[in-house]
Length: 618
Ligand code: TEU
Ligand code: CA
Picture (tube, rainbow, N blue to C red):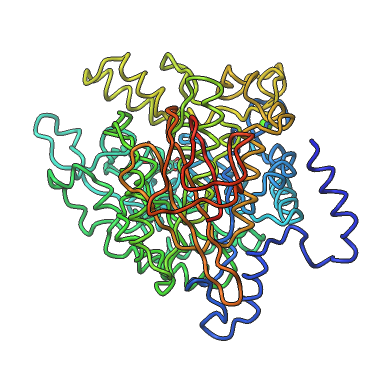
């Protein structure tokens, strides 16, 4: 750990003189701060390439899945004090914002995405005092914290739902969707669901409740009843809990499945065509934008926050409705086009070629305007490990190179980049071989429906879940080669098994190796921060049809400054290639490469080895 010591010394030396100025302040942040202070009225004094500078546009975000990050008390479950222990690690990595997956009181039917009390910390994760300490530790290191807002649904153990299900007359009845069933001639005592909605987690989206003999709606698990946003009291209560956390000092929210909050009037059956893709309809309810605008007006606009919505069911063309700054809704959303480029139905694999991915990023760059903003990500807690999904894990060397190539791409494409914990180490998918190794409700329910329901062979189901199941990314962080990978004490049993490859792949080993994926990711993040071109610059794909090489530029002109011209060249695969840059273009000085010893000057023909990733000026 060379880094923290050096940084601490520097910090100590300057702390008194520059009390108010962060030494980590990048050029981008300075420009942004300057723009903010010069801001008069509605418009910023200094647009950058037509974009209004904002800290959240310039940020690199790191997602922490608290259950799997670090266990501090030997119960096998990650916790907030565990996160606090690693804040230097995150600061040294160079990320500015931490997105914390749900940390609230929850019975954990879906690992915290089922919230029982929005104002309480999950017992297993610690106390509110632990949260406050973590937050001040984050701020002390000039980072920010956004938390997960899961308000399309609550837990069925939330007080609102406990009240709601108790009687039809209860004042909380309309906090959720209750409906009579359809008559069931075959078995009159057990009516049929009110409509044909399927749940994301298999089966019907309706659950029968004996107490009042009605069904309630749950898009996700039976224990995740959908909140009724058409009830103004629900909106009021949600806005109040948002203020509760903002007043504590959190810097914004990642909003879970937020487009689903406005339900279809009358909840009619899906047509066979709509049944092909139910979220498409569910995400486009009539009041979605009205509710988000109300949220913005009453809550978000009163704070300096970052908001990112999980845009399930929203096409790229529709995104500006939510993210355009004139709409006053959210700052940005996660669009799934890229992360799902290799996905067929559910966990099945779809063969893909590089030009398809390029077309998606090109589409992003053209479909969004200067008053929209975008995210860049290829992993999270719902998707496989980054390198297993898009890189090459067939050899240790290719794993390292391909992971570095993907990190290079994420840090140079257009949009705020998001890194998922452990991907900076190139952690891999887990070698699942049987159902009982999984924890995820999505896998368990799908097994019942598909395998026990006779739709799929068990071996095929396990193979697909190994490839795409969500638990791949949820295995504990591999901090060291100690038993349990240093995630928990050697004697403890982690809530989900540590990947057996922790002895080779772990943070301790990577900290000691200057050529590790960890150190490389840190350099790639630093490069992102050092050049505004990677934030506000134009994007141009130089060779869209090339199936092996991804070459693109990011360029930025600012008054009174030399044009920033950056060229990114990525060889997607193990096949070496002598690549001639199109249009007589010539690569200039090398600024980042994933293979040590890469020549300092580029030229018009580049000899690219397996999984070579390079960034040049041009
Ligand atoms: O995910 C919603 C979502 O898009 C799911 O379809 C998810 O991508 C899918 O399960 C992957 O196969 C959000 C959360 O990110 C997820 O963890 C939660 O389980 C879900 O909402 C319910 O809150
Ligand atoms: Ca713990």
